[in-house]
Length: 305
Ligand code: 0GY
Image 1 (cartoon, rainbow, N blue to C red):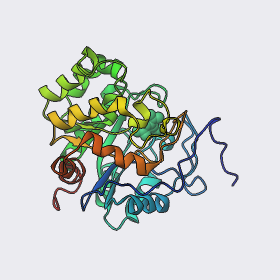
Image 2: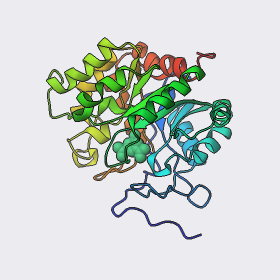
Image 3: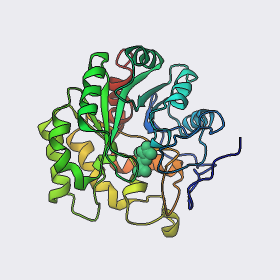
């Protein structure tokens, strides 16, 4: 089979990342990453909005070891639609060191959900980012949430900050923990104390079942690629946002690399530098222990945490 044509302008993940200066606590979890293909074994979904480069489970596990993580949470990427085969294959070969968050339709059977659970799936992802997916009707998502709740799973949501008002009532009615990807994608040109991020903080304040990934500075930053500035402390404009959440909600924040970084347009981050970024948003060892070990273990490995 010939390899599918990547989306024009696609940036491949960065091979040869540096060794982080920050030593991660033992048992650290990369709580947001993906596998892509390989397309010859796990073809991309016909309805996808982008075609990436391959990023295999072997490459993900090598990165995990290189950066000093112990575990991964692999999140279904939209380029695979609701076919979770690549993700489930990765879980199956992780020796218990990976958990998964899948995308399902209402047609999923109870038997399929049980099999996914046995392989390590602990959540479903609902995506509201228009450039990535055609929306699934909310009634269908509500039905899915009701069905996965008895399994002890949670719902991961991905949306743009401007859409939070419209999504608020849907999110706050979900019967499970709700984990927000990338801080709800704030516009970091706005003040951290401004109305937009204030709304997101209020969501977490008023709803103790809402968690946030304080991930993706490279996606949210407006400051440009770090190489341009020769910086080892890049993405400074994102720091106040992530730090606020780490300080205010220390027991409901997670962190992940987002490897292999789909759809970045201007640069591909060095994952070693991304790990070093954690020190800016969680400066104390106690904060990092919660962010990287205790919190993800509570959600994904509750029997071992
Ligand atoms: C991310 C972010 C993105 C993509 C996806 O599933 C996906 O395709 O999540 C994005 O393009 O912002 O979390 O990986």
